Image (cartoon, rainbow, N blue to C red; front, side, top):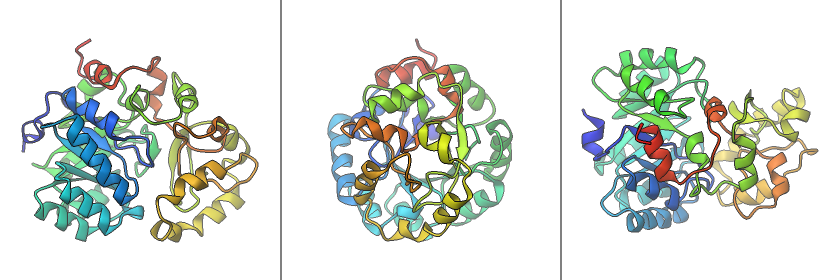
Length: 324
């Protein structure tokens, strides 16, 4: 299967679906209009449906993907994707065979982001059309345990004829060429698109990430979703990263992801304080008080050190495609 032909892509560049309101219609549409694949992040189902509609208005005739995080997945999310006739759904961090079946029955391509071969075999057996190979360089939540250069060939072997995209540390045209030359169907970039004008991340969050030399692999922001994630350090990580009591609390709250409405996440995010060790996965968005940047996860990959400017998303696509 030629992924670029099937999705009508001009460039092997995919924008990662940053959830919680970071990747909205303006960003996804701008990426797709520029010849890449724009992706909406997970949000409450009704809101997701509206954003899909806005994407279709802003980028008519262009492909659109949606990223769905399995711990927060509801049947209404799947209905919104089917009714909006999205082209691709990316699943991550869990298994939902019922969703794979419903999406594929509607003609939607299903990709599953994985870090290891055993998980890849399982999601392919469940019906996924292809994989996103995640390396430990990636920002946000992590399944990866290996660098991308090691994970990608292992997952290509598992996928065989099915497409494998590559995610983790992709920030430059050289990074894109490297993974495509290694056999990836396309490169997935998150941090490069976090640092664009259309992204809905808080400007202070973006400033912290620009050129960041250091990121940490931590479980600190795992209240309601105990998992590893890569972030730029802030006051919360400096004070609490690795604290056993915090991790113990996080490990007892995984059930919350299945019951707490996604809409409540933003209220919880604004309430966080660096001195109170209850840190959820919600990120700082435009319009929130600037103080939340020191108490929320500053998701970013290791490629942040190679990014020095905030640019329009179309410019980021062209740069990643080597067209500047």
